[in-house]
Image 1 (cartoon, rainbow, N blue to C red):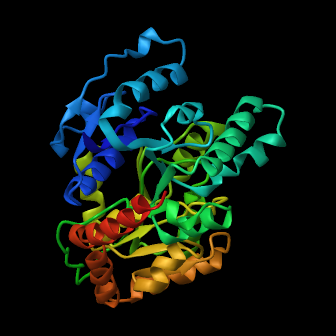
Image 2 (cartoon, rainbow, N blue to C red):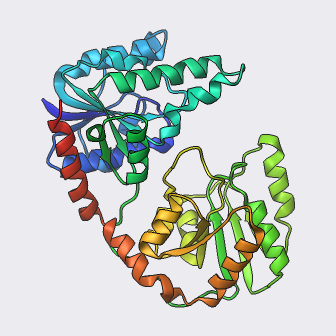
Length: 372
């Protein structure tokens, strides 16, 4: 009998990293954990060194995902006290949750609270009737079925769920990124000052506004690198390539390897975040990775960036749609010594050291599991 069996029902590759982290945390809390190979978990989570269970049920034998998940639950629920079933997206079908025995707790990775209110947006559009029904059903079942519990990545997201009517004790904070050791911040700036925007580029990421400000400053002592594959929606990729011809910008448009991603963060002076405010808070993994690598951030003046910058003093805030605000922040960033942020960055890293994250997680999940 296991304390937890874990799997990623969505099969989304990016979310296997979360599955591995959760499995490791649960194991290190003293729980007996096994991975179920529902999608491709055995291959993606080799590094965690947890036992793998292979289902008799095969996906191709079932007419839809709900029927397949019902078979998985029927096969493995007798072997465990609790389950972690993976992540929730706004249009994820969660009909299969009704088959989880009421005596067992099933945890889901709730990335953002907006996914539980998105039916309101879909209702206003005649193009998303299926998404509207799914979102409405997901909200209904996750509120009504008390054996469903959630992992969220910070207190802001937890409080958003509580404000939507979810019980506080059903929510466990599980930070997305952790550090194995402290990383000393740099004591000098590059020449020119190196600004970096990195990661998948969507329309919501307004690097064009940053380029506008840099062209107005016209300082060759400042250089902006934009790295990551761009979405083609509404010609965003074409616009970005055109704007990146600026002499103050370097564009890296290819998909980045892990080594290149880390090298770019390690070599920059500041990570620049420039995404539009979302309908609900979402943790930015790139921000966490930069801070854990000892780099300060330049970010829009809203949560979670505002909370992190004000709590730890790890960067500078600006108003996204105010060009003058960004110009002033860039000038300040160039004038400031990197040591201005050193103590705050070390404090942030210390809070996210694995052993400290584990202590908080262990206390939080113990309390949640004690509730019926």
